[in-house]
Amino acid sequence: MSTVNETVVSGSLVAAAPLAALAGLVSFASPCVLPLVPGYLSYVTGMSGADLAEQRRGRLVAGALLFIAGFSVVFVSYGVVFGGLGRWLLEYQDTITRVLGVVTILFGLAFMGFIPGLQRTVKSGRLPAAGLAGAPLLGVLFGLGWTPCIGPTLGAVQGLAITEASAGRGALLSLAYCLGLGLPFVATAIAYRRALGAFGAVKRHYPLVMRIGGGMLVLIGVLLVSGLWGNLTIELKSWISGFEPVI
Image (cartoon, rainbow, N blue to C red; front, side, top):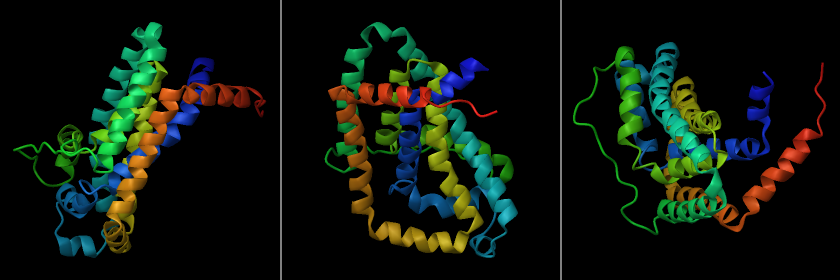
C-alpha cells in the first residue's frame, strides 16, 4: 500500500498528471476529433441522428464509456511501454529528458500548424458492427488509427512517461490523458443538444484552441530542456512530504 501511495503522490506524477489530462482535453477539441464526435456516438450506440436528438442518455452514456474503454486500453498500453523503457534508461535520464523536451517543443509547433504533415490520420478500412457490442472495438481502432492525428499531445504525454521511468507511472499518466480525452465524450452523451452548441463555439475559435494547445506543449518542452521540470518536481515532493496523514 505504501508503494502505491508513493507512486500516486510523487511530485513528478502530481505535476505531470494534470498536464496529461489537459493534453487529452486539447486532443478532444482538435479538428481531427471534435467534428467526428456526433458520428462516433451515433455509431457506437447504433442510434440515428433523430434518436440522439431525443437524448436517450442511458444508451448514449453506455456507448461512450465502452468506446472510451477501447481507446484507453491502447493508450495505457503505450504508457506502460514508454514508462518501462524509461526505467532502463535511467543512466541517461538527464540527456533523454532534454531530447524529449526538444521533441515536445516540435510537437507543440506542429499542433499550432507550423510544421505541416505531422497531424495525419490513418483510417481503418474495416469497421466493427454499429452498436454497443462494437463500441469497444471502435475505441481500439480510434486509438490505433487516430494516433498520428493526435500525436503531438499523445507524444508529449508519452515523453513524460519516459521521464517517470516506471511502467506503472507511465500507465497512470496515460490514464489521465484518457480521462481528459474521454470525459468530454461522456459529457456530450449526457447533454447532447447543449454540447452541439458548445462544439459550434469551439469550431469558430479553432485557431485559438490550436495555439493554446500547442503553446502548452511548447511550455512543457521548455521546462524539460531547461531542467526546470526536475526542479518543479523536487519542490512538489518537498511540499507533499509536509502533509500529515489524516486518520
